[in-house]
Image 1 (tube, rainbow, N blue to C red):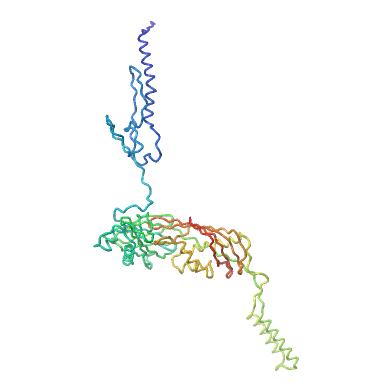
Image 2 (cartoon, rainbow, N blue to C red):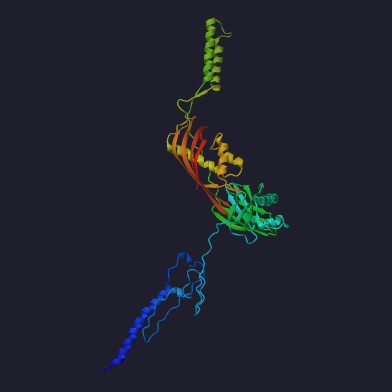
Length: 497
């Protein structure tokens, strides 16, 4: 086979082209990688819910070039059409030739509202139904501008509400709203309580109570109406009827909270009633802790009446013998009557006699722990009830003496939210620990140094208030009718988390 050889000048040309392509490849790849990656961006500047970023164009290297150009590294800040600027507020100066307009970077979603500076941009009507053991609370929020236009349609709307104007709104609105809300369990209507009206600031689900004397801008003010009903611990059905259709409102959105669950609904002016069914979704509250009891050793009952009768009969019989007197009818009837009287008197007058102390001595921390913890737990569980009489009845199972009234008042204050929109906190978690136990220096029972934690949460105006209190106290436990009762409480330290 013949062999052909290229001339030397053609070999030189081919070698030059191959070397040029080899030099172009790394330069082109370096520019392409730099454009696609760009400088590292802070995490908070990356788009999260915005439109998709434009696709990066691919830079194709030419198939052949006559020479090896020197290509400097590309600066991403000079390519706004491919890499969005880090700070969208900084616009690069227009220089010829004009650069293509930069793509607007996507913004992250706004954070949840936490301040009271949010303004109200339109009419607001929102209702909340809180179903709790032994009580149900119905709350309605209107924007203050709508309430003012309803109360005083001819008066000009102020820019802000002073304390005096807030009081006038509260008093006047409360007089009209007395029968706005009706609640029934099934077909049984419940007594209508007096409504609580408050002026607050913010938006539904993000409200703050006003401090004493604080003014609030009209476009940040809400007027809240609240009714608290005493209901069964786990109602099967609740029917809410609303009559407060002010200023042309025709529907009232409602959100229901029960246990850890919630659902939404609506009350319309043509229907006016919202029905909620339990259907086993809200469990009944756990029973109260058993009041600690103790066993008293059975006492020996001494028939003191029979003994005195027999002794008296013997003395009388001896007196007759000494004086030489005879009983009419002989001694036999006298002895029979004497014995019968002794039997009867032994049943009428008896005295219990204990061989030892009837009250067991509590000297160990573990023993005191089993007594103190359920008593303190029941104190908080008593305030699950709504009616004052029910609270007292449950408290009396664990508390005795003057402490009963004092503990009622102090616990009510501790479980009530601050401000003028007072709502009671329901305790969800409780734990107590006894550190030291000693005999009661004033009588029977014992004194225990202990600490306990009470954690509660309450839903209010569409949001929740957590409350955690830690107590360090000395308690006095006294026996009352075979049961241990809390009769003394000396709080030494309270911490609110």
